[in-house]
Length: 180
Image (cartoon, rainbow, N blue to C red; front, side):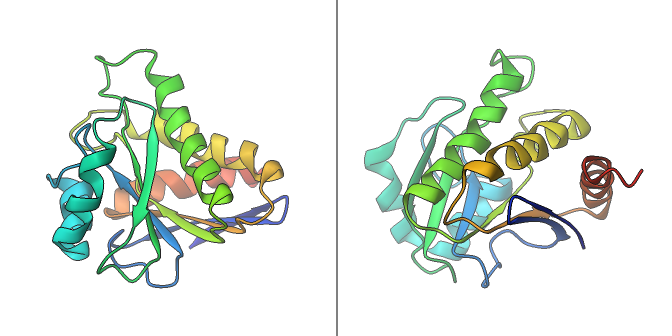
């Protein structure tokens, strides 16, 4: 695990399953516009949370790229799920601003709801096609930039499914740390 402390907020990167982060107050769902079960992260979170999550999401949909909404976590071991709709790379523009808004809005929702720890997947890097390294730089850049504004949120975890994705996150986090 690689970690960095920015303004009393710990940012860490691990390999794992976003739907199995029992020590986190909230997990982030890389959602679709309708906030419905799907493939990838959305499918994993909805399967683990059970049908109550789908029911809770319906009145909040649709959301637009860059937006985030919050629900309870139902059968997940967390208190909350924050649902973010990342941009489809090459379709939703400006993609970099929309992706940054996902992370920023999720952090703001966490802070507003008194959440002390949150776990993020690599939003938009799966079927939405966002290049991993560019998306990683945006994600970690927003996390580091927002850290100074956070008073309740003290721990941000990036949960990567593939070892190769974790390696990219670790490299970018090391660069932010100034260790490379």
